[in-house]
Image (cartoon, rainbow, N blue to C red; front, side):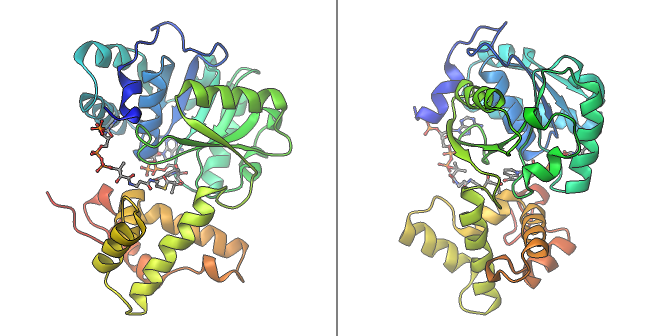
Length: 300
Ligand SMILES: C[C@H](O)CC(=O)SCCNC(=O)CCNC(=O)[C@H](O)C(C)(C)COP(=O)(O)OP(=O)(O)OC[C@H]1O[C@@H](n2cnc3c(N)ncnc32)[C@H](O)[C@@H]1OP(=O)(O)O
Ligand SMILES: NC(=O)c1ccc[n+]([C@@H]2O[C@H](COP(=O)([O-])OP(=O)(O)OC[C@H]3O[C@@H](n4cnc5c(N)ncnc54)[C@H](O)[C@@H]3O)[C@@H](O)[C@H]2O)c1
């Protein structure tokens, strides 16, 4: 059994997580990332509330988590984990009793600020706020609150149950106590943490997103097909997925949000140039695996 899988079969106390500080976690956004983060948080003994806009989205998300757990764990463990998960559509009510908020909603600064501004009024003083943003500066989100010393970034990787890394981001205002708690939480989630400054894309995305964009530009220039680029990078560079498979996996909309945001902020950086092909696919609703088609059509 791979190390990544073993965490799911360990026995955590159902009443508390292994590292004292953060016991109750609120995950806002029940999509691709939120579901994965909630799954791992509940699997590692945390009490978790997942928040999204509708009950329908939340029920689907819970079903996804259960299905994901079925791949790696037995009935008793799954029942324990699912018992630690609750769902809510009212974010302000959800955070009333929480130690940590992890926001994983759409990659849009104004939407994230609006959410945090309302949560700031509702959450207790000790609650730490974090964003799982791929590309937006954490400090630009934190200004919507009066708790910038209790604000940071927790950037997880997709698929969250398998990817071992967690980037922990501090802004100048983040207190040492908050940062230490976030590192401790990463450990409690069985992730390997790296310390990041609040720079564009932190560590991984600053390297990965320009690589994915350059692959798309290579196809736009007619130099190779997506299939050949993917085969080349898997067999020639040892990557588990080629850049087109990965873009479909991450979501073309998310990739577009990232590159458009960086291009707006740094218009002279050629690595951050938008792509007409990516824009076209997104405008056609071809967002990747989540809609059944992106660069590739998913097999039914
Ligand atoms: C843009 C954002 O801001 C940042 C990002 O997230 S960028 C994206 C980062 N992610 C990547 O780069 C992913 C690249 N791709 C990969 O690493 C691999 O293709 C992959 C991990 C997605 C799938 O790998 P693959 O070997 O095909 O998966 P699969 O065989 O199904 O499972 C691998 C192991 O994980 C386990 N696993 C699968 N699903 C699981 C789940 N839901 N929960 C826990 N474990 C699971 C499997 O049981 C298996 O373990 P085993 O070796 O003990 O049998
Ligand atoms: N997709 C990835 O590979 C990946 C990896 C790391 C980080 N991220 C980041 O994580 C965040 C979420 O990405 P995702 O891929 O899970 O997106 P997604 O589209 O799968 O899910 C987003 C969810 O947020 C919900 N939502 C939107 N606005 C909301 C609000 N105001 N209140 C409550 N819920 C709301 C949506 O209904 C949706 O279910 C983004 O900031 C993204 O950049 C994505």
